Length: 531
Ligand SMILES: *[C@@H]1O[C@H](CO)[C@@H](O)[C@H](O)[C@H]1NC(C)=O
Ligand SMILES: *[C@@H]1O[C@H](CO)[C@@H](O)[C@H](O)[C@H]1NC(C)=O
Ligand SMILES: *[C@@H]1O[C@H](CO)[C@@H](O)[C@H](O)[C@H]1NC(C)=O
Ligand SMILES: *[C@@H]1O[C@H](CO)[C@@H](O)[C@H](O)[C@H]1NC(C)=O
Ligand SMILES: *[C@@H]1O[C@H](CO)[C@@H](O)[C@H](O)[C@H]1NC(C)=O
Image (cartoon, rainbow, N blue to C red; front, side):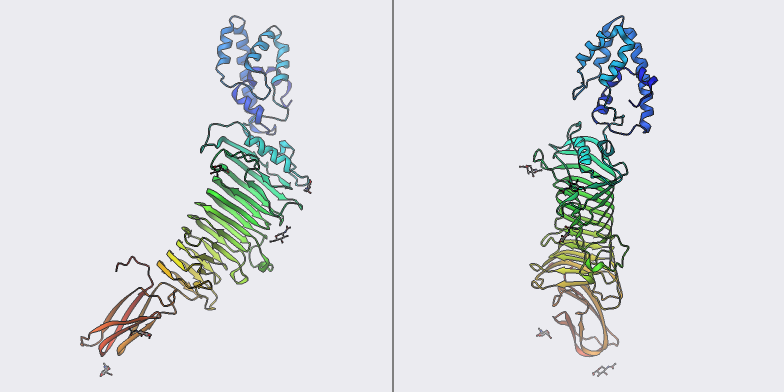
């Protein structure tokens, strides 16, 4: 018993029959020195006082007692005596009040390892070793299992039990894990796992993830496995075996303030589901601050989004072959800093592997010596981002489609090697369908600007002006619209016309040779043109 003797002697069984206490008994595993103990003691003393009063009243009429106990709608569970049993027990022992206190206590008190903070599952109370020496897999799985099987409070989405915000607390420890912490059952939600470090053991499977939100049991109760599970304040070390976190077919998952390192496969893998939000998180295969001599050997992928409607915000990816691999639609990447393996060594910052429909928005991000690859992008925005160290954007043709793409308002800085800010990979065939593509208004230093809108001015005394836009325009031999302004420098009033648009070259001719300046804008198809 953790309470001192004087408190203990004041305790009455009524205390342990209340709703809050029954939760404590089922679930509470917190250490005894928490602040809640003080409250608990105060409550115990107050309850005990009330109980003594009630016992006095009970001597006069039992209805009062029954009414008071009847206020509590929750019957005790899990082998505790029933309320009816309690009343019998209570009245039998009425005559030996003082002695009965001790006896009730021994019957009804929670296990000695428990103190009362509802629905917090402390892994150390399950025997996990916070020094990281002993294998803590079973202990932590025990806490997760109890949390998932704890009391529910209605449902979230149909079939997903609302666990009411239950928390599995890693107690700030460092735990060795030899098997994935795979959730044992499906159909649970409103749960937090927080506050500690997990490290894969030397025999951890390379195809596992330290935390795995895919159900071990196939209790198919819902269209989604989990809803509103939060993983926060975690340091995950995969020890170059397997990955960090896997989220499978889940809804509204938060990964918040985590540091995920030494993965051999993937830091965070999101498969199916909706709305996994990854924020304020650091991911890197190797712990480096950039310029690592082993950089060319970085492997693995920091984040895989193989699903829709996810968001990665304020995240740093400091080493991996691919920073973020996206193969679902409508994902948002914002405030991401990628300085994983440099493009020069074959790395990719963000890889959009969603040919035909991507609906990805990459904004306010920082691609640092690494770039973006987009396969047949359809609906893609890349804006307000910074590309450093020749980082650039590669549009890769799969079936030759690029449509609804905005690459605007970005900054590019490079090393004067003539690297183009936007490039095409047409090794599978040329882009044949180019529609509503706007690559414009980017500022460029030390790299070669590319755009879908090009402007030029020509001056001279001539009847023919030719502007070659090949150095700027992204797509070869594609100009959808030309605007020009013809300004004569003398009083002549010649007839002039657009005579030829071919091979990204524009020819303007006038009826007579005149000194003039000609300003030309050529557009590869950003605007909404009507024929
Ligand atoms: C892995 O190692 C842990 C100790 O680190 C041990 O408890 C466990 O049995 C091992 N598992 C296998 C499959 O070898
Ligand atoms: C890490 O992954 C590579 C393949 O990418 C594999 O060859 C290697 O065996 C893995 N390492 C471990 C420890 O399993
Ligand atoms: C459960 O079954 C439904 C319908 O058969 C299916 O759509 C859903 O994906 C399944 N859920 C899981 C978690 O397997
Ligand atoms: C422009 O060129 C034409 C034909 O070569 C010539 O007759 C004319 O004088 C020139 N005008 C000026 C202003 O140089
Ligand atoms: C336009 O210019 C191209 C290349 O110089 C040429 O092959 C083509 O015949 C010209 N078209 C017309 C209509 O003059």
